[in-house]
Image 1 (tube, rainbow, N blue to C red):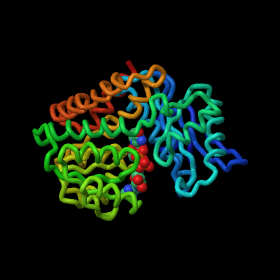
Image 2 (spheres, rainbow, N blue to C red; image 1 turned 90 degrees about the vertical axis):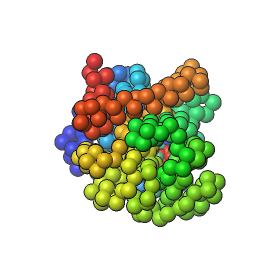
Image 3 (cartoon, protein in one colour; image 1 turned 135 degrees about the vertical axis):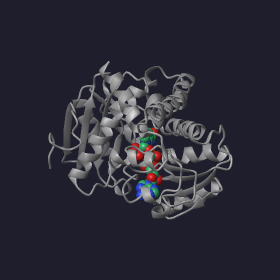
Length: 342
Ligand code: NAD
């Protein structure tokens, strides 16, 4: 397994491999760039098939955090952590997250952690008993997911405005892939606006409950791409825009909260050629980290107003992409690099 020569290494400042024998913790913490401030990014728990898969994921996610935080106007760098374990079958979370907290503490404030896929604010609360370098705690800024959902909802509205020339979502068909922490709140916003939802998730029970609450249709996970919808909203894991799925898409907009949606950069170009408007993932899903950035002196109104700026940032990216005949992902990357290197 290559580290410095890893295809996704991309100038990471620090990568820490963490092993705690007593709890069984195996984790990787990646700090991509701290030029704008200490690295912020959540901790994902996932049942990775290999260490290599976990390393690839954490490197891609932490770089994404650098770009996300820069473009969201935050004085924060980018980092991320992954714990290699099955979130559905982990019975010693207290010991795991205490051990994780001790490793985060060793970084001395160079990296701040929070919740992500497979982890919850309760897990981060446990880690906070071992380190002050965590965020998104109950009683402070709290669970970032509803704010990520709000930003994603506004991002979908920006995409609809640009692509379809409409200010409302009434009657639009939206396929949501993954109805977890963010996906659920996103469905709530979309349903309130009159959108017709097609949902999928690998957890059948929660899928049925959410579908009932929002009067939605459900489909099997593998069928979500081929739905006759206006918008495909990826809200599960990354790399769902790839050689296999792109030919299936009927939607004219891809806009969802998942990180690292493009399997490779070239898939952004392919979406453009297919006439599909893509809302760059790290721009549309910045709501949660924006809310977290207000944690030390929390003010919900200020945080919400900042999240609402995502709408205008995306509109500007869409307009520049059209004017320069570039992909929306290229425009976002250029804008982020400009801020980081200024
Ligand atoms: P979550 O774990 O609560 O939800 C993910 C959902 O996706 C789960 O219900 C899971 O069962 C489902 N899922 C997994 N694989 C699937 C598949 N193949 N098909 C259908 N469903 C599948 O996670 P979350 O916090 O809601 O985050 C969702 C995505 O948004 C992730 O990519 C995450 O990195 C990203 N994100 C989350 C936040 C946040 O505030 N939580 C912020 C920014 C980005």
